[in-house]
Image 1: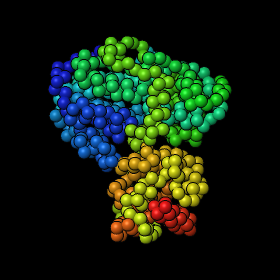
Image 2: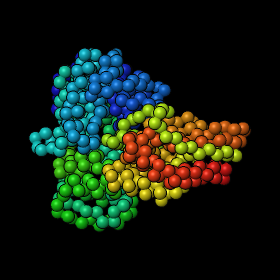
Image 3: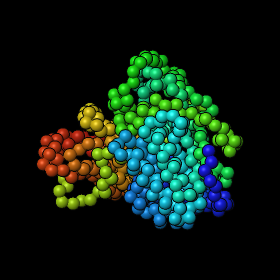
Image 4: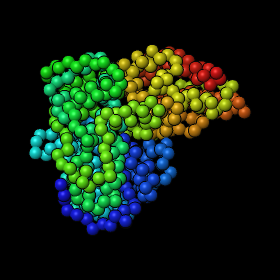
Length: 490
């Protein structure tokens, strides 16, 4: 589909703005744009979450919010092309209005700044038929971006397959954990998965193709599959024997709750993904092949194999968890102030600060929490029962941790290499919590380990919660500090 043109020259598209830089696609797009020689600017709500990215020093990072119209004028000044990768995957009240308003604000600001072009990644789905709320909202965002006349290239894709993508992770965990997989009629609907590397190739390649401006381009892999077949293909690749039982009826509310319990994907994300299973999302045209003959998309099985290789190599470049902030948690900045409870354990360790940092910065994920794991598991179960994430989000890499990343049920708030790691709790608590690990050099081959828990209680219940668990905290944090010392000196 074509919507108007644009008078820009491709050779002038040098200054690029990327919104959604903390997201799964945005985090992979930016280093590839830099490799191509583009000058990149990022607009993000929480700039601190990009501090640990290896490319952070090569881009201009601005704080802002498209919904609240903060920082848009400054971000779009002098920009030749802008990527709009702002999405709400969560099933929260009023998300459609929020997405529509955000896109409207961005389109208006882009037009006013004279931006040459907007590139948007939306969702597949036939406009002539019914669509889920989220797919309908994706299409509406495209309309809003076109509303002020700036040429828009709108790509529409179904499932993006890659290590760390939310759709792939949901398939992976369900097949890995369930020997018997329930199915229903909606799993016979077809979708056309696309490898993440191919999605990035389309997004970047369109910058050098003026004929892609003002068009809606459907992108997908070479074949379409019923959703059930996606599960079967994954099981075959992994050599897993799985039975599929037809339940005939499908309750999105119940099944999203089950997915929330069985996988790291919270119910608020699982619901829109499962709701979309009721609709076919396949490409209806050949525009992508005609406009991008050089791109030969991977088939689904090959894309899965590449994703599994990245996981086995601990080479997950970005994960959907990096952009996920639970609805009950907001990005607090750590401050030492009145009303803050402090609980510290200090040990002298006959090992260098670098060795001690290597131990505590590798905590969580597959290694667990070093001491009293059953208590951490019990806390995770309690958090999941009240709608939290538990300890299931894991970590991107077992040894490398960057600021802004997720570490199980914590967010990495600050990292000082070979010195300090500060985590902020994203579990449901009657207050705000932090856990800080610090290795302070004390000579050539010695250091002091300071393990400090901070808690800012909310009201009386918050105080009662902390002091009721004080004996447990005393035992588990002391044991954790001793275990870090043991591992560092081993």
